[in-house]
Amino acid sequence: MIHFTYHAPTKIVFGKNSELQCAQLLQEFDAHKVLIHYGGSSALRSGLLHRVCQCLQDAEIPYITLGGVQPNPRLSKVNEGIALVKEEAIDFILAVGGGSVIDSAKAIAYGCVNDGDLWDYFDKKKEITGALPVGCVATMAAAGSEMSNSCVITNENGWFKKGLSTEFGYCRFAIINPELTYTLPAYQTMSGCTDILMHTLERYFTKEDTLDLVDQIACTLMRDVIKHARILLKDPKDYQSRSEIFWASELSHNGITGDRSLGDWACHQLEHELSAVFDVAHGAGLAAVWGSWARYVIDQAPERFAQLAHFVFDIDELPDKKEMGLKGIKAMETFFQEIGMPTSIPQLGITLNDSQIDELAEKCCHFHKRTIGGIQKLDYTDIKAIYSLANQSEA
Ligand code: NZQ
Ligand code: ZN
Image: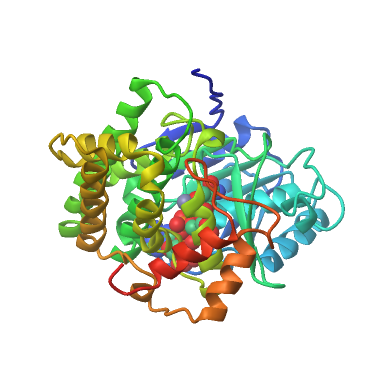
């Protein structure tokens, strides 16, 4: 049976200099006092933060700023933001940065409206009932938080990284100027490209019936990301390729390549434990585990793996769908290596010992309270086996 939900309410303003429309958009969404939230130093160094502040000043929109969001954003910064927003009677949060800044802004927005310890909501002990409005000036094509309803935060108390997806988690608007991504280091650009591919793959690997149209959109999107990532390796200032990749990051996580709730998502769960503890770049962490996951589960969906191999990597039809699918897995890994991404955990600069593998697996299965994955339900033993496979340097 074909069934899905599609909901993508975020207004997108795309193109060169689009950040100069931020004041106009804030007025459109009835902002009276704004928190401008940003990360480490990239938005300061590029002059973007200054331009955004100037727009608000010119439009006489009061604002305060809060920077210092780290990659894999931390709960302590979120709590600092919640206190500040309440104290200053802020009614709109404008994130200027990558996925970490946008997620931190979303978490602050939740914490201002929902009482008590915010982490209880990430732990699913309580249900979110609303949020302050959030908009963003996105500086990185990767997480797709601009159009997703998700927010992923790391709690330093125990180093747990958890996502929260609710109907209140969408940005009101997202400003996307591909030129803003010119300053990204190559590793971050390619980590972003990997995350985009993975958001599409996680949806593609579903046990549900799918529409050919959706599969074809997914495969075309992946071909496009692969093609333009290769161009950006050589020319990071190719505007066409930056634009292709940025729009792909939105489409890969706004539901058009498949309903998120029907997808697999095991690799994201495996990766979140890695970045929670070792603070690795999310996309790189995904590349490090994907091949091991894929080989572990391929028997559950050889046809889907074979189709992926054919449509994304032009692999010839073979009678043995598993053999064909394995060629596709190898081709994806070869692409990851070509763009400087790891295909094993040691290539992330970490070699796990047995007790670390155990710790990650325990956390990932929520201490034996859940399984992960869709095409194959993975329990603690499976998760441990996949981490062990990915921990071999030649994985
Ligand atoms: O902090 P600054 O100085 O801004 O530097 C950042 C950071 O060091 C830098 N950067 C961002 N834009 C830049 C730039 N440097 C130069 N020029 C620019 N234009 O890049 C580094 C990484 O930034 P970050 O925001 O952490 O990257 P990304 O966008 O990949 O976000 C990763 C986070 O999003 C979560 C991940 O788990 C991770 O915590 N995710 C969020 C999702 C969602 N909300 O829907 C879905 C994803 O699957 C993902 O889990
Ligand atoms: Zn992701």
